[in-house]
Length: 296
Image 1 (cartoon, rainbow, N blue to C red):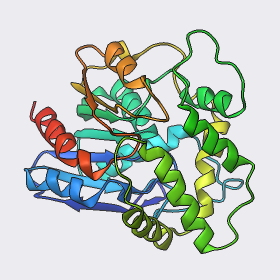
Image 2 (image 1 turned 60 degrees about the vertical axis):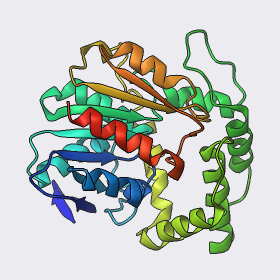
Image 3 (image 1 turned 90 degrees about the horizontal axis):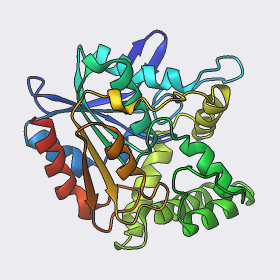
């Protein structure tokens, strides 16, 4: 556990402390253990110091009474720097997933000296307002010209139904719903291991100080909807950047190519069959690409 500026965050470290550091940044409302153990192990075994952590209001990290202690996504972004500071890292290789990719992009813009390389997986371009695109899709509103590509129909259908469904009545229903959400995010191309997902979601529940605190990440966005810069600032990113997207991405299809186009010199890697999550079938290809990228 680290505590900087009164923010207590759970962190976990793997590998030799003398090796190049990789900081793994997960997406919104997501615990650090969603970086799969086997994937993390591949990075550490190949000569990287790997750190993962729980965002505030997820897992074992501090939970907040949002009414009494409101915060924004700027604070969640600053937590990334807090983790680096706690480990004495002036800079690190940032590997970021989903909304974590927005955090990584913004840090690369605001604090270029702290980012050795940037890897964004299943993310959207900073400034693209992907949250607004999702909300329009879920509420049946048309997308204005120039908007980012909307999520796939199966994603919209599932989450539209979930919005109108009463909360789970017990733990069994909670786990079942989490599994079905993971199934949709997994995509349709690769086999889905329901038993492994059940074990993971049981672990998520057991680790959570307060699972309901996840909603604070949405409140944080509403508290500062202009978290993303209004202008296209990605042209100023200096860190060597690797952009990864699955060919069956259900949430942000095509967003990876836009990031790679906007960041000078960025490389785009499309992983066949991968959806929004990190499936076992992709561990080797993904780890190999990140190891090569962070050796630059």
